[in-house]
Length: 84
Image 1 (cartoon, one colour):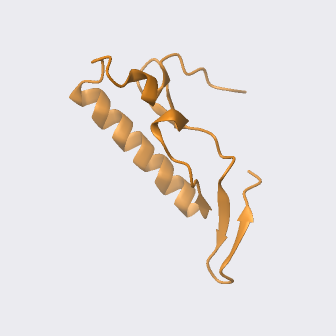
Image 2: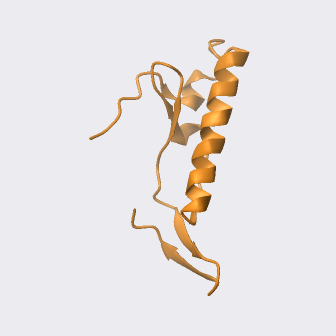
């Protein structure tokens, strides 16, 4: 099941003046929460950019494009390709 990102990518909204302070804070908090979740799962995204953040109707962000992500093994110092 996939979520529909009706507002498109974050970078497509730059310059359109629809990102008021409330929307910016919602997006910032959502991306930070997503990064925290990935860190707890020991995943490094490695390509977090506005083009990889999609927005739904309520301007809630979804982090996408995990093609460059890696699992981090803190104890062995090894990186593995994320398979999630």
